[in-house]
Image (cartoon, rainbow, N blue to C red):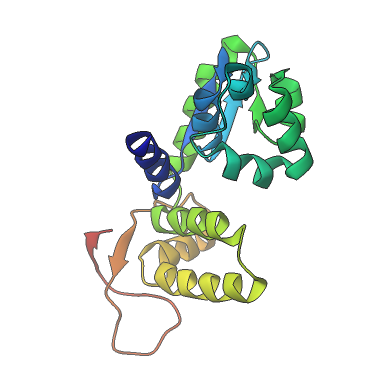
Length: 198
């Protein structure tokens, strides 16, 4: 379990967005591994179950932490205690699946989704993921302080001025995640040349 738990933690703390693609049956640890991803895409044929109780087992792979945060305590108890199998549409209605896409379209959908994520500002995406993951169990005061720290990091990258330039020039931004070297004049945005990747 220690080794498996380390994998779940690495997935949760990975600074890049993750996407689970489910086209078959995801039960027990397999479903919790999918829930540990940031986005979940499933086909209408997909089926899901927190099967543990039917096998004389208790939740693992983060299910006891993930489920209540995603569906609320009562629905989490229903899924864990009754170990029912639900379809993709019900999983989507419970916020356990982000999109339900036809089987013949899922590969293209996931590829386009991946391309959109890759085109995003890597530092900002990492900051957003961490803020959302941590914010679920923090006070508003903590969340505001974390957001302020994250924005300071974002403004230290070349991605912010690139976003402003792209907006002005009516073009798509090209994000690199590189750090910007600040100029000697005061500015609220990073300027100058870039150095090194994050």
